Image (cartoon, rainbow, N blue to C red; front, side):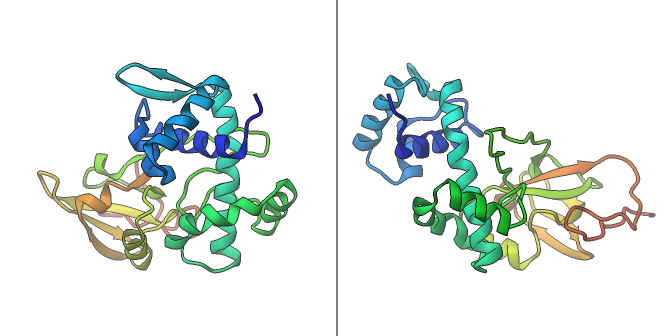
Length: 240
């Protein structure tokens, strides 16, 4: 069976859902693709018949190896388009995901390659998510949720995992974006707020916002002249 662009889009959404859930459900997928449960159910049956996913009773669905292979080109195209909209067309990062849903429909392989070139062959989208290679390899990640951090932890923001416009607008305004260096000064008990030092400015971040931020941490002492991937000095640790 021929794999249509719609199948690829659905496979990409299942792939995204599987980053947080072992199995995706029809309800989850319906919300992600903004389609009715009936329409999603029909597409899932077609994908199952094509060998792109498998369903497990009482759990949900997950991609097969063939399904992941079908998903990665769609994810690459979407994330490259997001970079183009933000870096070249100067849209806000809070607008990129929604705008890309329509924009990417007209992108063929030739345009995708040109977008890749014009944006400097990016490795990550504006939200920090890795961009699969042209031959379908997803770069590995070595990050974790900010909710796992403790006072004294240092590192940089890796990804911001939300498409909520208000949250992205706020985080962008505060400089809490991928590549920003940070140090955890304190955190409140019982899902209390985090107090962070970011680019020499203190920020208080509630549990809800901290939950969408993923970070890469650094062990041990840090040279105060060391810079993170965005070129900003990492904050000095206490006594440094």
